[in-house]
Amino acid sequence: MDSITATTSTSAPAGSAWHGVELRHLFALRAVAETGSFSRAAERLSYTQSAISQQIATLERMVGLALFDRPGGPRPVQLTEAGTSLLRHADVVVARLETAAADLRALATGEQGTLRVGVVQSVGTRVLPALLRRFHHDWPGIAVSLTETSDYFALLALVERGDLDLAFAALPLPDGSFDAVEVLDDPYVFVVPGSSSIAAATATTVTIETIATTSLIGFRNDACQRQVLDCFAHLGHQPPFVFLSDDNSTIQGCVAAGVACWLTPLLTVDQSDRDVRILRIVPSPPSRRIGLAWHANRRRPAAAVAFTDAAVEVCGTLVEGATERAAVTSSP
Image 1 (cartoon, rainbow, N blue to C red):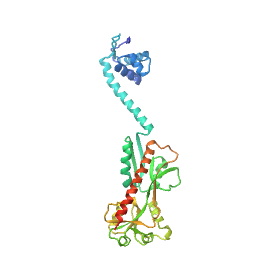
Image 2 (image 1 turned 30 degrees about the horizontal axis):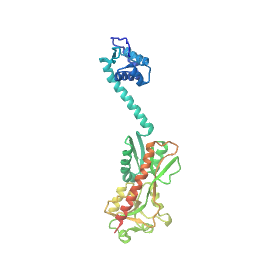
Image 3 (image 1 turned 90 degrees about the horizontal axis):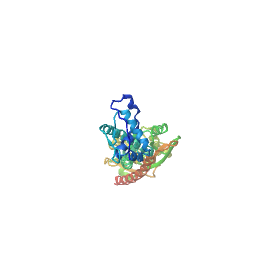
Image 4 (image 1 turned 135 degrees about the vertical axis):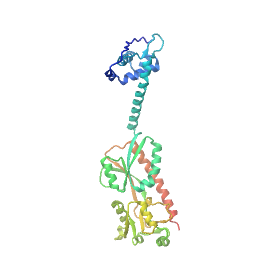
């Protein structure tokens, strides 16, 4: 039985009185309104009945109006018009608080927030669409913020500073506080104009020795250019480069126009372009190995681990498919 008596004031409260309203008062208001009983509200909130009674009485003093009609006996208490009005506002406040709690729980478990990822051009074009589709399906509450550049070292510097959670980078990594997992092994291919005599003479393959006598288009970025030059290290000389660019589509357009040829990792190539031929290199030079790197001394959030796992699977599938398509494209 709820035999609660409250002193009701009909005077408007001073504005400062509302500053004393606490969340526990609003939770008590809602619990009593929903259960119709001070005792049942106390059970729901794990308070004593007297504590609930005191909270409601305190709230009524602060707002200056009765919030419940208390008929006594077994009949349930009921909201007054003032109580009904205040409850609407209390519901909004409590709902926002519960949303905030859910957001913080999601952040704590890695189910919500922003994942900051660094990518290079070929990864962004060939890998990222499928990877993001896969990742967002499994982790819909995580926004992915991208930093795009052609410079692996710039991305790693951002990881080391804490400005990126993950970055795609060429392996092996330079010295620094990094860990990484290899996500793709990207073979080098030789891209020539569709009408090239090299393509006609060698059909599907070409040797490094032949490439070394051919005018090439290369990458302006030092790291990418060094990787290409490593393919010629055993020859003791380098082929002439007639044009440099860091935009893959620009380079491929120049190849299609007959400006020069292109030694490049397979994933940088648009294999749907019928104006070029893609030739395998024999013997194959070392592939471009791409890893996904993170700071070794920081804890990876669960979303970053999931993104890494998804990248390994997606990249494996894409490289297999790209290699098969390249073989078909290179066929006479």
